[in-house]
Structures are given as structure tokens and as C-alpha cells.
Image (tube, rainbow, N blue to C red; front, side, top):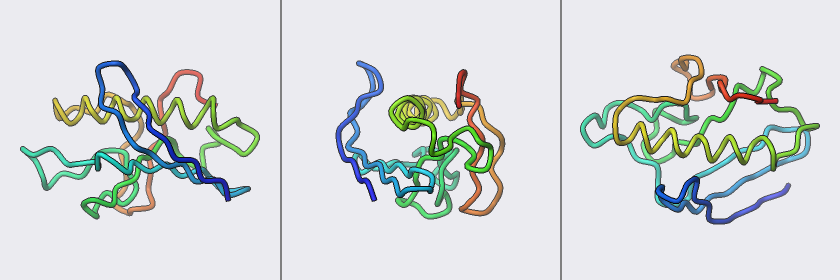
Length: 126
């Protein structure tokens, strides 16, 4: 298993995030925000963070970057030019949502299961 940790800052005006990426051969990469922790909107704490796995478990949310079954990402795609840019974009979308309550990242509505994830609407994805 490959595990990478680091600090990323999606844009000069966004927060810096300590993150982790875990990749096991023939499985979808998983990304995690270690700190600052993802948080729900203070004005609507009952609403889950959009486009996350574990969205019903406060403090355990994990970004959903794409629909795994869609073929947007396969092991033949380089993580550096797919997963990491999608992760940076997801963090920008998250910060906008946190400030405004509107998710601008596209994707399809999530189901009620913690395993559900919406497809990304990223230009040039896969």
C-alpha cells in the first residue's frame, strides 16, 4: 500500500490542509483531510457535508472525488493528474459551500448510504 502525507493549499486564498492519500493496487485511491478537520456549516449542523463518504458520521467524512464505478478513474490513470487535482478542486468547492451553503462542484445527488458517492463533473476528468 502506498500512503502519502503532506500539506496542500488549493489556492493562495484558501486554507492549508494536512492530507493523506492511500492507494492499494487495483483499488480506488482514498483521500483524507487530517487537519483542519472538515466541518459542517455552523448555521446548519444537521446537514452533512456534500460529496463525502461517511457523511452521516460527524468528524469522519472523507471527500468523494468521483463515482468509482463510472470509469472516471482506473489504475491506468496517473494519480498526480487525476486524483490530486480533483482533491484540490473538491477542497475549493468545500470552502465555498462552508461559506455560502451552495455546492458548486457539480456531481449527482448522493444516496442515503455512506458508500454512495456522486460522479464528478470536472472538465477533462478521465
